[in-house]
Length: 147
Image (cartoon, rainbow, N blue to C red; front, side, top):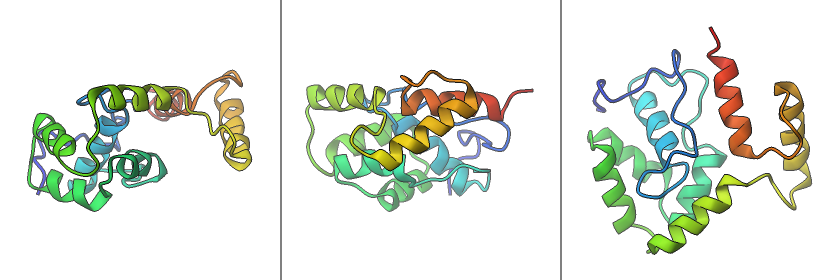
């Protein structure tokens, strides 16, 4: 069981931005927040092991179930980082940085269906067409928890 002190209540606040790096990895902090909230019964409208999470998991050679088991054991962010770096496909710090930077600007290039979906989300949130998936997620989180 996860530690309720570290689990965010995602019915009241968003997970960390996908831009926040844990151990250099984009997406990981957000995935950990969603996983902890899931295990604590406070995930709200968010999904753990979604398409975004799986981009990281597949690139690193781990699964959502792997991370869920680790998080359920109550590990800290630092312990999770150590485990991620030691398991799955070995990645250098330079590879992690390059991948994370590529995710910062990801906008479904070459995926027409993904581009069209993302453009609709940009329009809904008033974002410029040159925005990224991370821009959308941050704006959507902010809009969802506007008081």
